[in-house]
Length: 511
Image (cartoon, rainbow, N blue to C red; front, side):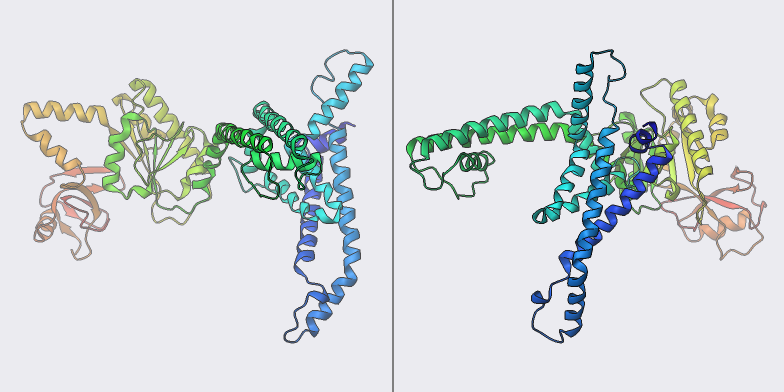
């Protein structure tokens, strides 16, 4: 009995995987049979045009195979029934192995617990599929696809089928109350119209006719096949129509309240399953980071910016900026934002924390990011992912570089330095602000241009670039060591290993 229980109720067990795989095969065969049945015409249905001989011969073969395939489908239905029965019988109702109850109460608990298990949404779907044994209900076989959808590995973070069903299950008391209200109103209205008009209205001949009319009226469908003709009957109809508006509002409120979170969770898959490449990811966004976002929009197309933070997207998020809810300190969630396809990452400091705590979160995010990237299959990128980290406490700058940041920005120290220097040298703060803001003269780093012969000197490179009127060369960078030299001597020799640091309104030289 324990092995059967594991086969049907322990997803991690080997027996469960075998049973699940076998059911998948049965579903695929059954759906294929159903598709053939509804698409291949019988000889009588073949239109009298063209050469019909080949199609008629094929249809005739199908007619001969149809009984065999029907027996195959009946066998598959039988296997489904056996699988569902074993799943229900091996279920262990909660509390049955805990309480010491009399035999009668124990039997009742076992039976009632299994009945409630059978009435769960996923099991009801499998139960409805068995009704396909009736020829008129063969279309129910398509419901088996829901079983594939709920177990498919295509969705990694939020399976829409299971999420919606779980939302129904978690709020089942609300739905039970709503359907009870609908059933009571339908029964009262149906019985009332039957008692009022059974002798006057030729369209109402049974209680079933009255219940049908009441349900159609409550749901505001109004087929018009049955209409009240007496004044009292119309009064009953008026009450039902008003009750129908309240019923629809009740269901709309319940569905909107219970399914909203499930639908929002499904959005976690949206970006991962897209085709975004070359985007820039921002970690650590909060209310104090809006100016960072505005500055990035000046530098990038906002459709390339993706924010990953916990919680829901703020109301003032610019259009086109993607928001993915998640925790960047957990490797399992970084796939949501297609990390391996990103161009760059900005790890912003948390303004809502003190500097020490904010930097600790930044460092943990950097370690998590680098650990995640080491586990991924290398892609043929033109340049590696570039990571910029904001540090609030200067003591943590080297820690951030050790954690994997390619560049560290000491935003607090930088701002205070600009303020202090502006007091000592008035006007310098304004100049530096223009240098750092998009839309003005900015700093850029690029390789030595191809039209400048190498080796050359810094002075020659300065004069060559200045003749164009768009570039002011101010320094060099050694990519190997990362050392920058600002305003070096004119006789400094430049070779192919150097990069140039220059001021311009836009990136003139190719990087």
